[in-house]
Structure formats: C-alpha cells, structure tokens
Amino acid sequence: MNRDTEARVMRVYRQYADHLNPAWVRLFKFAGLETLEVEAEGAIIRDAYGREYLDFAAGPSVFILGHRHPKVVEAARRELDRMPLSVRMMANEPMGELAELLAQVTPGDLQYVFFCNSGAEANEAAIKLARLATGRPEIIATTGAFHGKTLGALSVSGRDMYRAPFEPLVPGIVHVPFGDAGAVASAITPRTAAVILEPIQGETGVVIPPDGYLRAVRDLCDRRGVLLILDEVQTGMGRTGRMWACEHEGVTPDMLTTAKGLGGGVAPVGAMIARPRLWEPMVKDPLIHTTTFGNRLGWAAAIATIRVILDDDLLPRATAIGNRLMAGLRQAAAGSGLVADVRGRGCLVGVEFTDADVAFLVMAAMVQRQVLVFYSTNRREVVRFAPPLIATDTQVDRAVSAFADALAEAQTLLAEVTAPSTTE
Ligand code: PLP
Image (cartoon, rainbow, N blue to C red; front, top):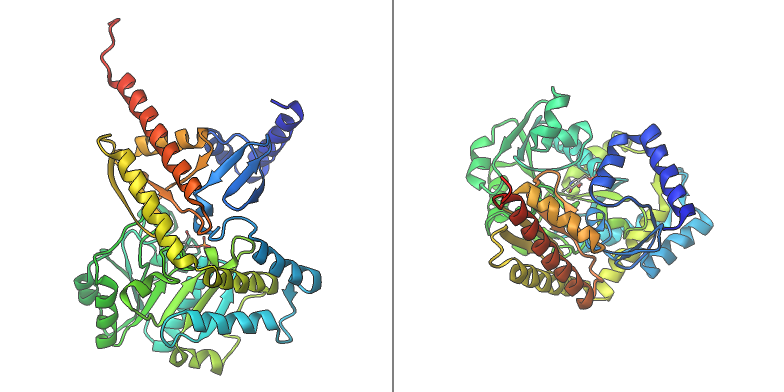
C-alpha cells in the first residue's frame, strides 16, 4: 500500500474526526471503506488507492445518469464559464427553460415551479404553499415516510428515531399508516390542507403500496377538497421506469417535489412544481417564499439530464435494468434462508433480510468486492440498490454476482458463529 496515499487518508480522517464528526470515521471504517473517493465516471468510482468500485448505491439515488455524464458536464461547464449563479435581479435562460421543461414532463396541469437546492427544501415549499393556498393548517402524512430533516420536512416524516429528539415539531401533522387509503379518509378534517406521500417509500426500505393506493388517495382528496403533495425526490427523474412514479397510476398531484437525480449527479437542485390555481398567493406576493441562490449551473445540468433521459430512451432501460437485477438477486437469494423479500420498481430495488445484522454483513461483503449498495438507515434489514439508468447488463451481472458471493460468505460466517463449539 502506497505510504503517501495512506498519509493522505489519515490526514483526511483526522480532519473529519477533529472538525466534522468522529462518528463518520467509525462508520467508514466499519463499512470497510477506509479510503477516499477521488474521481468517478459512469457507474464507476475510483478511490485514493486506484481501486474501482461499481456504484449501485448512487448517492443514494442522486446519480441517475451515473457520474459526470458528458452532456450534463458540458451543460454545467458552459454556465461555469459564463455565469454559474444568478444575480436574481435579472431573468435568465436556464431558469426559464428548466421551468418550462418541468411543466412539460410532469403530469397533467402542473405548471409553476419553485427552485431550491435540496429535497427537504422542496417539501418545505410544498407544505408552506398548502397552508397558504388553503388557509388550513393541518397536513396528513404517513408512518415510515422520509421527507427530509429540516423542521417542517421532519414534522411530516414518520420515523420516531429522527423526530423524538426535536419535539415539539410543527403542529397540525397527523400520521396514518402508509398504503391505507381508508386511514387517510378517516384522518381528514375541515382543517386539513393536504396529504403528503412518497409514491414508494425509499429510505424506509423500498416500501411499495398496494396497487390503486395513489389513485384512491387522489380521488379522496378531490372529493374532500384536500391537496395532494407527492414527494418524488427519490422516485422521480425516471428511477422507477416512468419519469415520475405517480404516472404508474395515472395520478396528477397538486404539487410534486423533486431533487436528488434532478441535477444529473453534477449539481444539487430541488424543485416544487404546482398547479396554477395554487400559485395565486405566490403571484400576489412573490417574496413570500424565496431562497438566495439562483443555481444557473444546476438548472443547466437539470435540463441536460431530462433531455438525456428522454433522448436516450432511458425510461424503458430503467425497467429492464431493474428486472434483470431483481431476477438475479431473487435467484441468488433462493434457498439461502436469509432473504425475506426482493422488491422494487425500475432502478429502485430493496433486498429485505431476515435480520438487520445479516443485511450489514452482506453490504460490507459487497464493499469488499468493490460493489457499493446502500444500507437503509431507516429500516436496517433492507439493503437498497439504486443503479444508474446508464448501467450496462455486465455491470448488473457483476452486482448480482457480488451479492451471491457476499450472501454465501455471510452464510458461512453465521454457520461458524452458531455451530456448537467442540472444545467446550
Ligand atoms: N424526500 C425523499 C423521498 C427522500 O428520499 C429524501 C432524501 O433521502 C428527501 C426528501 C430529502 O432530501 P434532501 O436530503 O435532499 O433534503
């Protein structure tokens, strides 16, 4: 091992320990990633020692086109060379063009866009606009949901582990079980402004609701005069095989939020897109909800990302990648006794293990084989695969083979741990 590289790694680890958080250092070591990310291209990340990793964790779900897609980089570089940030006192082309493009590629009459820099901010905007547009304070959210960690987004998220230390959170939020439209119906009151949902709960381990759930909630919201906010931060931008996961059920929300893949893995960009009727209070007072940064570079990257997804026909490719991956994972898991479920839609796939420790063992064993997948911190028995839409069949097969080997290693390890000792 190169001594200079080792010294670089140690220096960065000391900086993390002294100035960021020593817990991160422990986590990297625990996951077998005692190294530095250095460069990346497509589905491959290179580390400080020159090792190459297949990135099927994707950030999680950020690198929809892999790393540094040439067309996204070119679009971002053009802005870098002329004006990466907007002064906000003049109109600009990337912002106008991306807003129009988003209106075109989102379902139904979604038309007006608020831009920001993250998923949580996009959800904050949606929650605030729901209150503003209806004059009602309450929001219905779902248990297990993840909408971000700012105070408003956290308040509609449904994991006690993250919520409890920060209580009291924003008042007027009611949580109902995910996948149960009847529970939403029972929770609606005259004070309800909106229901907020993920079409598939990503962070909670790829939880797919029953068929017809989104449609049923949409109909219910229409009948009861309540807004529907769909959080497509993780499921959007083609990840599930449609540009937006709500298209699988032909549903148009009143507001749709997106981030993660929107910037094509080159820049952080978030957006909230709403129906025109809801925009009236924003027109009345355009300063009522704003943010400082006008990310021209990110908007240009997002335009290029959407164009690549459509021009290169990557939506059916996402479905094909997911189907190949899930078939391979199911075959590898069959008979292992360690996997409870393999599920997913398109390039968002979860493997649920019978035990959270086994999930960690398999993930770490995959890291040793230089394949990165994501451990769901919200549901520790689930390992998530989020391959980029540009992954090749060979890369999918490599991930499956690393999974099969990692599973076999975990089985051997567990057999050793549970075998009766002969020396006692
Ligand atoms: N919404 C969903 C569905 C997410 O998966 C996430 C992040 O994982 C967020 C919101 C929060 O996004 P961000 O971390 O960019 O604030």
